[in-house]
Length: 144
Image 1 (cartoon, rainbow, N blue to C red):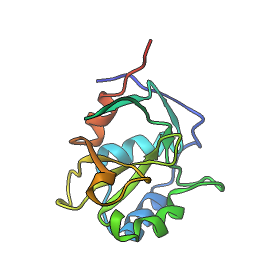
Image 2: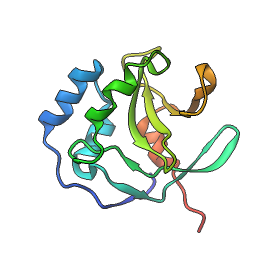
Image 3: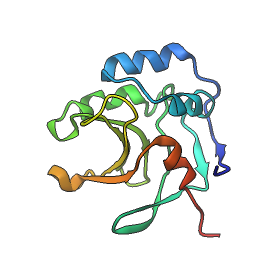
Image 4: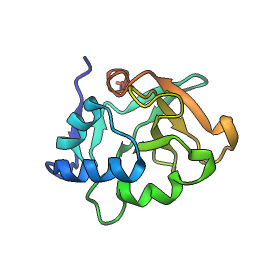
C-alpha cells in the first residue's frame, strides 16, 4: 500500500456531513473513501501524481473539502446536475478545474474512478483511471 502524507487538512470530519452529501448526491460513498476523508478533509496528498491512458503525471491537487467556506463538496451539486456529469460524483481536483470522480453510471457499489476533463464534451470528457479509491491512492507517485 502506498504511503501518503496529507497536508493542509481541515481536521476530523463529522460523519453527519458525509451522510448529508450522500443524500444530496443520491449515492453512498465507498468505505475506503469515507475512512480517508474523515481525517484528511480537503487535504493535499504527497505523492500526488497519477496517469491517464494517454497522459502521464496528472496532478491530484486535493480532496474536495466538506467544510471549507471557499470551495466545498456541496457547491458541486449544480455541476453534478448537468447531463454530462450524470452519475459522476467528484471527490478531488487537479489544479486546472478538472475533477476526479466516482463513476456510478454502471454500478451503485464499488464505483470506478474517472477523470472529468471540464474542457471536453460527451464521453471524451470522462477518462477511466482505475477500479477503486484504494487503487487510486495506491497508484499515486512522485517524480522524485
